Image 1 (cartoon, rainbow, N blue to C red):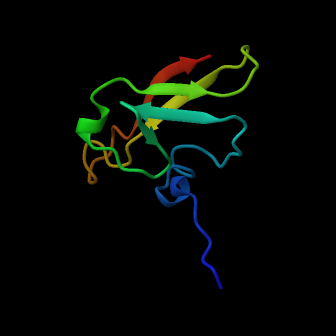
Image 2 (image 1 turned 90 degrees about the vertical axis):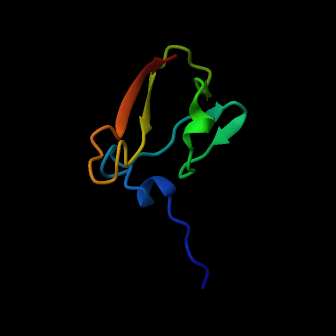
Length: 91
């Protein structure tokens, strides 16, 4: 029997701890220097020194979104008090 793939956001406890369960309603694409970010990927400091490029799909320009960056063990696994950081609102 094939194993079901679990959502990396659930495995990493982003869903349930940082945000409630949700259903995606639009496309989101984030990249750092051309490197595409996907749920569950590890990004090291050298990869994120520059500002990310954020592309949000959809054609209703009256809709606002909030982008939350989550580093589940920032600054350290024993003291993750900086794990959530709000960048701002995007159109």
